[in-house]
Figure: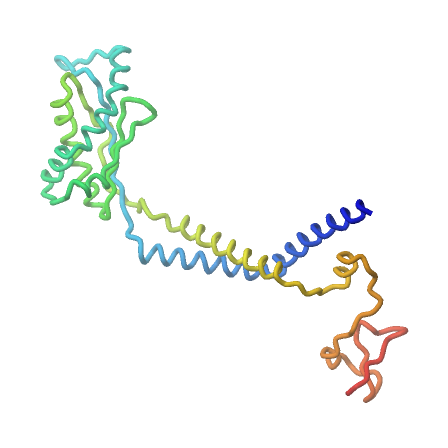
Length: 264
């Protein structure tokens, strides 16, 4: 008896999952429409409310030993020391004096707090190479500020760190593409979120619906046999009458033994 009850409960779980999947499949068009709507809204929202930004980048090589008479001798200990000091150079680069001097050189009245958000640095793969990024709302302004920092960096850093040297590897160029936001990614995220919400709503409605729609559900859920089904009288007029004014024969009942439904 206990085993039969356990099997019945397991069957009920499988049936519930099957019904949920069936509900999702039957309403897949709603999920698709929700995804398309989410993509459109996310794209338009990003285009309308988010200001695009542009990034100008340059890279510099730093060393803890300056050149002597046009030549530089670099040993392994020098490289290790440079790797240890490279993070010091990044802090010097983003210092208040350095950034404000760079803005003054191009005649811009930028605040230090704004420039801290615009200018970021990164050490390339634990090497002595520093990558400097300037991200602003205008591509021309980003290029101008990046060029000013690149011009002042070798002089300013070597004045603070004695015996060091800085060489610019790649000068910044005018950015021709938007750095942020990414319209395609935002649209895709919006579509996925709306599709997910639509699927959740469909599943909740299906779980809250306690009506029985099929005979098989009664047989499997309650382990009883269905001996009769009340026909849908509202659909009787859809089919052609074979019995004059006394009744209609449904399409499913065509053949031997069909039942008559009295015509009211």
